[in-house]
Length: 144
Image (cartoon, rainbow, N blue to C red; front, side, top):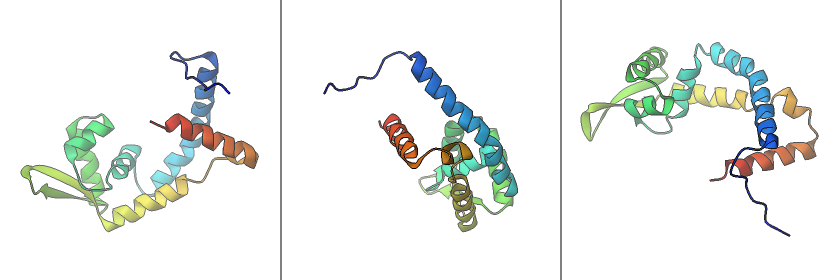
């Protein structure tokens, strides 16, 4: 059996697959926004919280979110008001502020993640065999 090779340029099939994934996500987006809104959060706030498995410099969060540091300050202020994150001094450089989840922030992040991990109707409508194929193909696509 010949090993499958990955095309260097996108093919029509790859574009169709990507478009289908994009459409599934587009249909899922209102649910994602609604869940986040129930917690009084906006997407950038949730994205920032997802990055905080350990305390990180606010500048690093800005790079991950691809935004200006002043935006991260606004996000941090809102999350801090809700008791979800705290600013800490970096022990190696007092000029740097680290952003860390509080216990409440960790709890909220886990609740949101658990709720959003429930598959949308488009995935649930597939047979279990098709769900396995989809899972396996997407996992392969994510391999480094």
